[in-house]
Amino acid sequence: MTETLLKIEHLVKKFDDNLILDDINLEVKKGEVIVVIGPSGCGKSTLLRCINALEPIQGGTISLDGEPIDDKSRSLSVLREKIGMVFQSYELFPHLSVLNNVMLAPLKVQKRKKEEVKEEALTLLERVGLKEKAGSFPRQLSGGQKQRVAIVRALCMHPELLLFDEVTAALDPEMVREVLDVILKLAAQGRTMIIVTHEMQFAQAVADRILFLDGGSIIESAPPEEFFEHPKTDRAKQFLNTFTFEAVKTPHKTIKEEED
Amino acid sequence: MDWEFIVQHIPLYQEAAWLTVRIGLLGVVFSILIGLVCAAIQYFRVPVLRRITGIYIELSRNTPLLIQLFFIYYGLPKIGIQTDPELCGIAGLAFLGGSYMAEAFRSGLEAVSPIQMESALSLGMNRRQTMGYVVLPQAASISVPAFIANVIFLLKETSVFSAISLMDLMFTAKDLIGLYYKTTESLVLLVVFYLLILLPVSVCGTLLERRLRYAGFGS
Image (tube, rainbow over all chains, first blue to last red; front, top):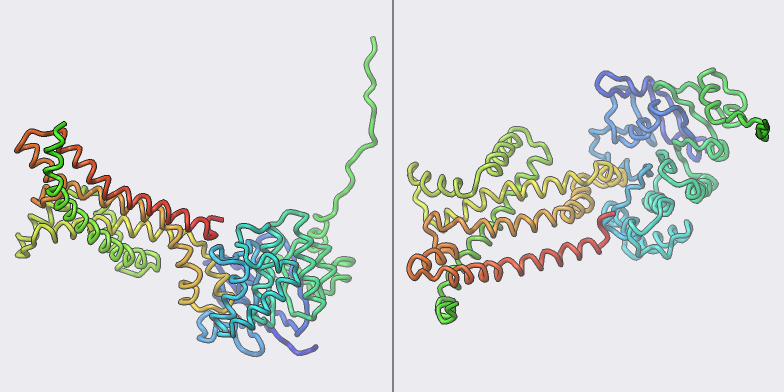
């Protein structure tokens, strides 16, 4: 369990002259669940996109299993097979049924046998409670169902690392749970995951380690108990305070009717 | 209404309709080819070629077909290229239609969000697989309504071909009016023949659109 899967060293990402990620260093061990939190615009999503080489990087190195991930690399698609990504906006393919969404990449990219892939896809769909939706099209599903299909689609490629980019941010509150439950189950299976989320209680439950990002840098990196109970920096304290509410209710007063 | 006159002249119109259909269909086919090439150049932002197709599209969309036909019909012989009217008609229609088709296909391609492509890439697909399995099927279905509208528009535009001495439906009608003063009869035949050509195209288009919508698009 101590083998390093992903290693990021001195990562720098710029959009023109704007520094988005500034000297990020991170090591993710096999089976580790990392939750990245921080204010919007701090570079959380960009970090995930860099790991998947969807964004070119301006400095530093990212490597998976010791192999560098580089947007110019010829074996980029081979590396991407090993990294599953789930997006905030689901991004199911609208012209394909649920089953074909899941089967497309294993069939076309990994050239696996159709029967075998279909069996696995149906098993995975069953596990997230969506086996009977296999023949449906994405537009016929709710947001939570679409996101569970998106997770299954990533899983069917047998990735070594899963990236979740605010996967519940676009969902209605009652659908958030069904998606988070799936991710919790994956964590229990020992999957290596990097999760960007705003669900603090979920972060606390699922994470082995919390990364707090602000202004493009990792400000804190700590186990969840430590981070949520005793944040070291003021910036983190301030951020966590935005999730608690002070009671503002005043005791109910009856309005006296004015009498002449 | 002189029914005898109408029945008598149906074969003449049939012949003219065949010419209209022939030029129309070939014009549409070449429009599609030009449109595909131009849309691909614009979508992939091919340097230099992109500028040229941009100029072509603006030029072709903002000048009337009649003027384009005059340029081809009277202009080409001036630089030593002899062409027959039928080829000129096809070339003119393709010149006009190419830009309309290019815009229809390009807007279809651009309607597929970049993040759809990223989601395919992140599943390990290469660029060719991403285009073939994810982008093109969606772009094609989005383009269908505009494509059908263009086909109908182009077939209707064939009515100006008489100006370059093609004996199409319009030419035949004008000819008969000039010869016999049977204005109503000649025009009724003209309208009926155009409807015979265009209604089936319209109906097929609507069926195709509906089929694609029910195939799971438009979410």
